[in-house]
Image (cartoon, rainbow, N blue to C red):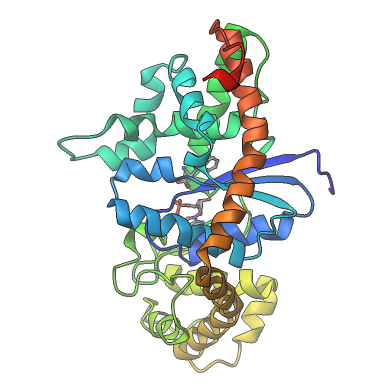
Length: 341
Ligand code: AMP
Ligand code: TRP
């Protein structure tokens, strides 16, 4: 459906190096669909603070991720891309939503349980993370939130928070729905096909393909990918074939072929070496123009910063209206003239 009335919101954290799973599971789909909808994409630097990166890393990774997103094809004329902390309504909205969110809802989140398990000290930010995310989404009255499977629970929590706020204070928010990509939804680690490929493990040798890796690095990582001891190149759900299945899945998403066509491509392959080479090749060709555009953008960060401030202005024009609505409904008085403060 071509419908600019449908508003899309999604976010990505500037923590670690963006990797192939981010690209196939998120960025590629955002770009492909951007002309059909009204899109807001956010580099969520406030969320990244929950894992306490060094200030230098956070600065560097925020710009790099924004440049990668533009390089992947996000078009400022079609989509609004901005940095979360540039629009202070997100942090303020989070506080207001905190006050309607029962703490038990947050303690039940599986990501919180995973990330806090075994830790002696856990920041309040880590627990509150999904409320900040709910604010991101609800401030824009987003209809659709494209995310990977792992974030579905957080989007469902945003729905619960929106419904609770609407019940307590009257109709204020649209109820968003998570949209999980059918393909590319779960790219697995090359060193362990039972673990999702993740930015957090991008430093582990052979785990991830980083979007900005050189062709040699990409080829090397694929050639080392874990497979199995047979030599059947077919899609399969069996746990032993998880490695081969992952490689075929990556090839399928990029070439946009059907499973039958993909299997046919490898019918005369001599073994997994041929499969790995072919997958490396399509990935290298897919990422080549992205890396070129990225390098061009990073040559002049002032232009990148300008694009991000335009994005922040566009986002602000929506987010602050909603924030004022929330405040009014909750009984906060608004300042008479914003110019005076
Ligand atoms: P994150 O890297 O966790 O901030 O995720 C940013 C976006 O990329 C989210 O929509 C994730 O679900 C998606 N994503 C991250 N890793 C993968 C993966 N291995 N496969 C598919 N999608 C992913
Ligand atoms: N929590 C998401 C992730 O780690 C990132 C995110 C923050 C997000 N705010 C969002 C995703 C709003 C969708 C909508 O992937």
